Length: 286
Image (cartoon, rainbow, N blue to C red; front, side):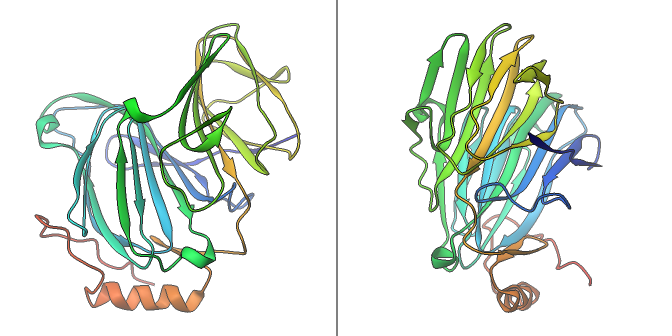
């Protein structure tokens, strides 16, 4: 049995972002409370990603690209370009501010853009942890190869391998590439799991798996994923949240009062500054 969640698609200036989480059908899968699919798109020379400085609390942001590049800057002083296959893991904790822009070397250059940005809610015991940033180049991530399948363990653990990315909850985040005709059984080692196909044609236990749709798997099942053509799919999940979370704008917390506090801090410009940035995104109006 599958729960299928079709993303709400938004055009953000020449390319689309599909948001699968949160949705009316499902608020989270494992620790993941937010799931955005960026592109795929071909950005023209006069297009550039320009996400001005904005704040986060109570979560970790995860950026993973298949094509393109993104420049991350934050209030801790980090400036890091993200390339395909790299992992940017930013722990917001009690508060961080960051911006995301097209790298200067690609401004004015036509280029492809395709990737995912997800948020993992922090366990309640770690919601107020100190903010932190970690970058892991593609070459540092474990890769498992098996019968036409190539599995990159982006974060957490799965298929007998563990990512070097430091996580605060049991996490499953694996990028799967399958050659045409290859099959892969999805293990049941994590309590919550979902598949998100991004390329090719796939079936799950013989049933077509819709493209760009989050397919939430039933617990304790071991379905077989099969590629009709060369295909790519992301597998996410982990342990369930340790209680409900409130999401408002860029804030995640187990407490409504804590979100109100974060709003006041951002209005007063007390959550930090990103070096080299002079702009910021204002708090949305009610």
